[in-house]
Image 1 (spheres, rainbow, N blue to C red):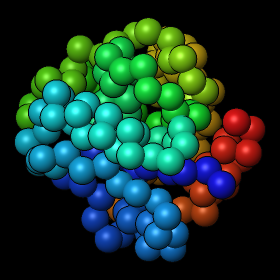
Image 2: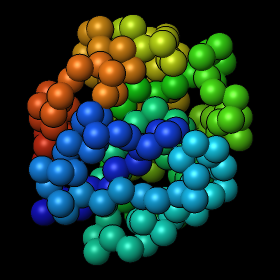
Image 3: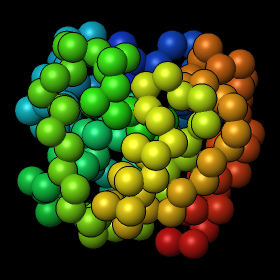
Image 4: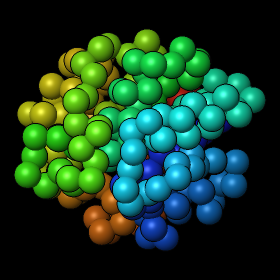
Length: 177
């Protein structure tokens, strides 16, 4: 069975967020644990991701949301630990005026093609990342891209509930690895 590690974005994922709901339904899903969710430090987040991947019994699938999508790109530059792949949901654009200033250390996003399969899931009305910026990231990173229509930032405020469509993306993606 695929081992899954959730990587929430800034502020962590609250109870209404699909990541938290998936974890409640499947206690085998683990969440990485940086020192600060609200004042993210890139080196701390990289270390927390490295620790989570090292603790996995087999190469995991990373499921990242928002700022953690940029984390995956930064981590990929400095780590050679194996993962099966990564799903990147709601990739933010650091050039957007909505990008949080406390996440400035993540802003210089690596453009290097990932050494693992990846899938980006995007919304056409994400206030943190325009579709053209997401398309550019997909091309740079060698990621497959799924656009799900108007779903905001694809978070708890998007009203997705358990987000069964996202879970189907995960199952399909993991089944192809």
